[in-house]
Length: 304
Ligand code: ATP
Ligand code: ZN
Image (cartoon, protein in one colour):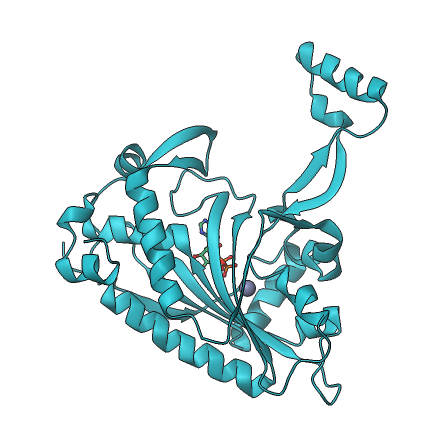
């Protein structure tokens, strides 16, 4: 084992120490030991927040219509979770309850509540930004977070179905987005170094759906629209993407009619922190007992 290897804790040991099962793969109750680190990471990221950033904390659900409008169903329908409820008359609802009592699937009677489980923290911010009229010359910056859901059940603790995402979002001219992304890749690098987490950067693509998705992913890589910062969380497998740096070009500008003072479509980009993956990486790298982590790491996180 070199010093850059994660401590050889199996997912099972980490699960036993830090989480409690909730009956479904990728959905866990988190213990205090883990949550203290999550809080510390959130505070560390807040200390890097640009002064001008407008802060929003979103609920774990968002409008189904808004997500459809931005084209999510064409790109990632396999990941989406939607909220359904029992609509209809009292008799309709009672019939569904009775089906459940007979051991049948009551959810067959449930229909869309107009909500989806947010698959990323930044999606609700673009329509909010668009409501304020043209984007100012200096652009816009947001600090957003949400509990996100993606339907990708797995026993791996670095691939959850329900996980926390924190993002800084920039809306403005193309050059402003490029500078923002470059700055944040440098800041991310210094954060990872200060936490003594070994990392690599790589170009990446999103898991686009279907055969056409292969082309979209190739296009994304070719245009360098997405970079990831990857950290090893297991001694025997490829490193895990813990942060991503995304350039959406005018995608959200077009969807939400976000324009600049001259009426040109605004561009956007975001830097996303996978809070649960970062916390897991810390435990995997430095061990299960925070008190035994390197002193400087504890200090940076203000855990001592
Ligand atoms: P992956 O390629 O691993 O599926 P992604 O590229 O789809 O991840 P993004 O859409 O960029 O991820 O999401 C931003 C961040 O959210 C990721 O860098 C990661 O840290 C975190 N994240 C994404 N999916 C999961 C998941 N299933 N469990 C935990 N964290 C996740
Ligand atoms: Zn984003």
